[in-house]
Image (cartoon, rainbow, N blue to C red; front, side, top):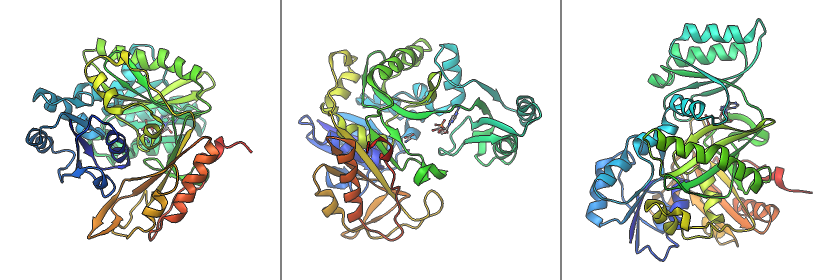
Length: 428
Ligand code: AMP
Ligand code: GLY
């Protein structure tokens, strides 16, 4: 079978790497891909939002399975268009992807079906939002609260506030200055939860689920969770604070109810469901649902998965996931992201990268490319997050040591990475 993967990030490289191991796959394509994906797939220069281009490629090449990586084409209904043309496609419909695409839809779904999440209110008017903040603060300056733009804001539309002034600034930015454009026309004001976060990712056929190992993501740019948020600077899996019993509880009280709720709402949910949870002192609470694999979570979850991913995906497409039991490696995986100088702010691209072959040759190490491309024969940087250096090992310590040993061999001008990925799970 010929398989086409849509996307160009580290997540898509990890998907391609796993799919390429399947004996069912005769040829792999990726649109548009990157320099790392090019070593295992034929990369075709089609933008991820070019649904008609993807459809034409799938028809031309007789593609038997399309896997859509990123959120935006899912929100735009790429899976609907491909399926309507008879092309087996892994990814939720546009209507189902609203579970990520509209935070208001997602929160209202959780409220309606009793899925635990932070209390919230929706506003489409800045004056009313300000009055609500005044009311909550009760004369105090201190106010732990979260303000979120409803629509798509490139992952930046969430302000985690500690004071009334910060909350007012968030409302001003979103609703008055419109720094996120139309995405700020409607906002959510949420109770601020405290605790550790975890990413729970399952594959679903709309009813049954196949859960991957949990992961923990490091969102801040600097060591010790300092500095601004990023797309994710590293990850590890499994997660000691989410033992199997707690995962099972999340499946029964959050994940299965959410999938059943989507079905009841006439938005049958198939594909990947990513649940971001906060482990509060009152139990797990949902921060967000995403309609796709996580990045960099995928770079640790797929190396932990022992099944043929294509078989799992086929079972999800045929509604027979209940016949598949996932087998996962009994050790650990750690991924360290190497980013361009300046990221998550402005950064330069085109910096030559050295040491990739030496680092990738280390036992247990796989280098997933994100923002890379070829400049002639040379691989150069081409994005903010450049590489995801993943290592597996029989323990967190072994996996972490291997990952950082590989990172030490890689060089490019301005590169930076966090030094504390998975440090918290290493016992002295
Ligand atoms: P989201 O885009 O909804 O995932 O939010 C981005 C990040 O903001 C999350 O990963 C959390 O770290 C933080 N966050 C979002 N909602 C809340 C909340 N209600 N309480 C505390 N932190 C939150
Ligand atoms: N790593 C966070 C995400 O993929 O949304």
